[in-house]
Image 1 (cartoon, rainbow, N blue to C red):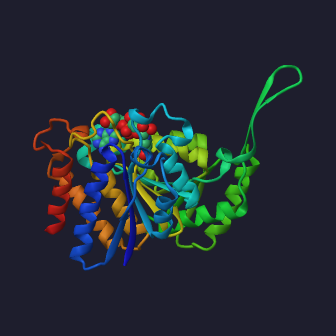
Image 2: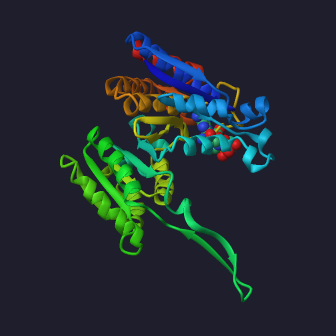
Image 3: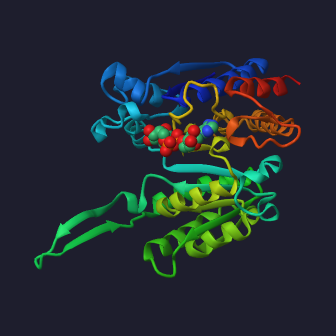
Length: 359
Ligand code: NAD
């Protein structure tokens, strides 16, 4: 029995998560796999109902579940609230409370959508990488931090880059496990030539590699990596890196792949995870049946793979998405008027994926 939590959130979050759940239910039902889905309000929807972006009860639903399906939160209606009441706080509370230390962002280019990438076709064709970013440590959390007054009237800003062996080991293991399900290559990205903390990172990752002799480990400095990502994106398989480097490199990699409406993500603590599209609640198109649900649907596939080891079912969803794209279905964000394509809405796109799964 899969125990799932569904937090659809605000704006297009409800639309795309709705389609993802329809796809998931169809697939699980047709394979006679039992599941239960408990829903909760998050973000602006929770604020409107309970006066806060996430309640203790909703956090408990997440803690009790094996995996959380998340839509998106936010919108202009709640933008002027104090920071601790804003919808986005729900996301941070979930990451913190569930200790979701590994953020996975795949970036894959579909041949039919190659024009959506700002890079040359020959450079991006075949790109299929996974960035594994450490999410709960590093310079974003290290102490001391802050801006301090100096005696001579100047100010001093401090942030601290800190990682322990344990923190590095656990994220490295995730990267190696993922590589085993892919092309068996891990690239660890650091700045070991300048930062001692990332020299430790490099050494600890090398130690973990000893347990994964079937996976090839290489290292790269972050400045070189940011260049190589644009130069030869198809050379990358799994990249594992620190919180800040991963923040920057994962945004860079998502542009290689084109539309934001296509990119899923997972945030994991071991097998437990939260799965969401990388995009936000898109207030400009919310409620209009225009949003691309494929990122959310692909996030559900990630859930099957990483929380439940159901690789075959995950692949079924991924193949169905590929086929739907091949067959010319396009939501507005990926529509280019090319011959053989048809503009469809959110629900039709979700339905097309289910129709493919039926075949
Ligand atoms: P956004 O990702 O919501 O939208 C950016 C642009 O991309 C918009 O033009 C939107 O229409 C388009 N877009 C996004 N997803 C799409 C999809 N699936 N299909 C088609 N088009 C899509 O980012 P934003 O506009 O900067 O933020 C809007 C709200 O979302 C803000 O309140 C922000 O804080 C919040 N946000 C939430 C999350 C999250 O919940 N994880 C992430 C980012 C932003």
